[in-house]
Length: 354
Image (spheres, rainbow, N blue to C red):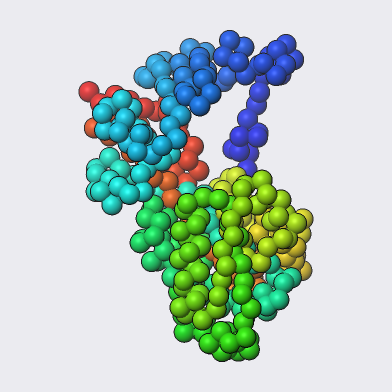
């Protein structure tokens, strides 16, 4: 947790002298390998080597320039034309099948979860069998490989795998037969009498494609009707916080490399980020217990027990996939870079291949 950027030390004397202008290039004082020399909003950020860095003598790259490019195709063209040496954010989805065959293409899971939130206080979603059925009636493998095609990893877990944690148990990603059985047990055989539900998502073409896929899946498998509604981000966020939804698109990028960055979202006071006003006393107690457990192995077991409540018992959300980072990096020119789950890259390690 201490590696999170909120714990990075800042130069208090500079802040006191310059106030909110302390981050201007001419005022900023840093302790890292590079210092800010130019920042043009929506265009580029330039960094140069910090001669006061403790390991400055071993820093080979003297200058780094990061371009703000909102269009994936533009970024790819610049990369192919050798105008830039790496693409760390956006890869054209329509070219991903071609690009992923290249030796300089990298794809790696990152610390993020895409999921659907169920409002468990609204009928019929207050019935856990309905929530489990909806969860099991999503073909995550087809969704990630055929629809979004961005390297995302299908999952039913809340937490990604970390060096110090994994759920261990393998869960079925898709079980349409059990989903149908659960709907029947809940009183809706073949979807008869089931009310029309709404999936709400913030305006985005990718979210729309995912919602349409799941809408069609639930109609085909469970014989239920789903309406789709989209809202601009501010309205969408406000309605989610107030519980004004039945099913809502959700996502979370972890703040640090530990399962608690995801599992705490289901605790009292934070559950609006997962499922509106969700609460389970057993879960709450397990999470509190994990906070005081000093044995790392025992702590892992406690967190697995807590995660099992979410993904095998209560189903307040339907996990869909773990985000993936997709990158292009000129590995025939440079060495010293590798993807990682936190997407925090140490550019001081870059070396020119000679």
